[in-house]
Image 1 (cartoon, rainbow, N blue to C red):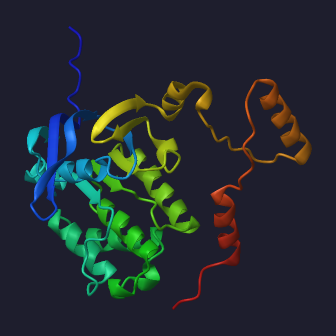
Image 2 (image 1 turned 135 degrees about the vertical axis):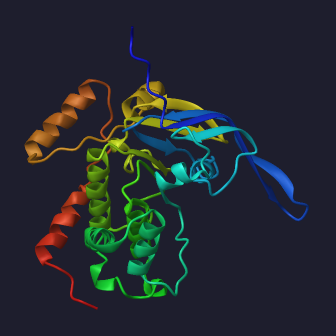
Length: 290
């Protein structure tokens, strides 16, 4: 007999979510009967313009908001069930932590809430603070942090208990080049652990080259899904692709431009890779302690 297919890690059917706004509290529907599945080990990207429902969807999966209609299951449970919460790490778009608390305290609190303690918790906190470049500021009030530092902390906080499901809302917003590199390294670890990731961005090229599948949301509805190349293919000749090369000299670059032009493509310019900035920062050595 054939082996039964495994149930998806996240299963959403007919999801409807509205918010009240304005003086009269008029309801405005943000998600319109959305269906979505996330499978074990899958990296899923959510793209769409501002107001398309990306953040709302992540908040519902994370049990921060409740669905008005439809069903949401995380590991077969309601999102607010203990089993689902313990398996989920959530990085919201804005930091939810009070400015008076300190980064190390945030990580220790979240880890303890998920059953971690003792040396295992301390070591994990130290590891994450180092990975996101916050060791030097671990015992400073969050009110002194820059936006990028808060972003790094929120991502570390989502990963402290090694969740099976990681939800990242605009994870690279406000990050500098080293911060971006740190997040990429952490995502490598998450994938190696076999966890699933759902990340949102309004930019298709943000971290979505890492995604196995991308869902495009517009006005709370899924309008397309597939790999990044499959989504571009739907645009046909209007699709714009970015290629990355190392070691090209000027002559080879000019030859590539001529080849592209001969095939009907238009060359749109050269942009240095962000990894070049990371390498420059590394050569400069560690930053001085504040």
